[in-house]
Length: 253
Image 1 (cartoon, rainbow, N blue to C red):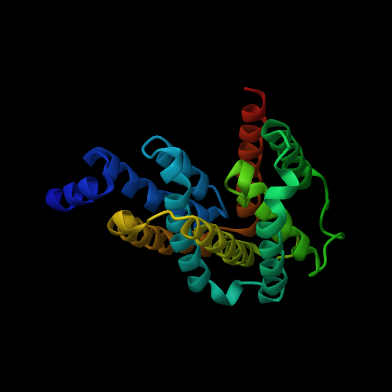
Image 2: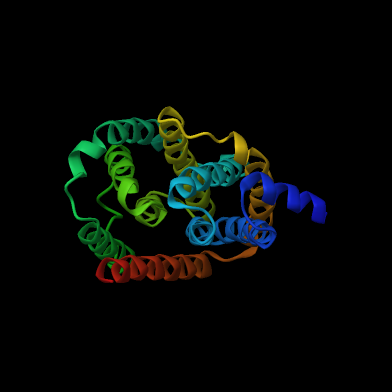
């Protein structure tokens, strides 16, 4: 087993203990997201940021998250709100094509604060989005998500309030969120491949982290099955609030 981990470390250009840490966090992150809706992607990103350089971090994180989210979407495919998927895909394509030109001058810190305020208000204001959304709204959500991912990385906390407002229960929230994140990560990976990033060196560790993520997803789904709607709603609000506050603090310091 040690030899296998050493092989992963050597091939990826990182230390042995870093490989072990990535494996633990990959399982734990997927478990958290499958059980409580989101949070695992941010945990993975924070851990990888301590190990990989920025140039490597985003594409590798994107592939690992694609594996985790796609596996979760497949596992929970019966709960995915399929009706919003085509519009979200179209919106994501539009956002990816024009986003850079639209927001290249926007100060990142100001955008982070705006997003933090939006998340907090949408989570805690009574029925803020419930009567304002239709299926066509996810065209805009796709555009918006594709644009902001260029600045703040993970878009899960921003997209989740919209998913909550149009979902019927906790399982549909988790399944639909996983499907939408799979779409965004797919386009992110395509962009990095197009600009010349080589994933070949990192394929072994990506595969291992993806498998562990799938195992974490399966374990998290079992937790989701017995957790009540009330507890799920409270936990999801708490997670979103913590992430929003993190964005706000990051915009100040």
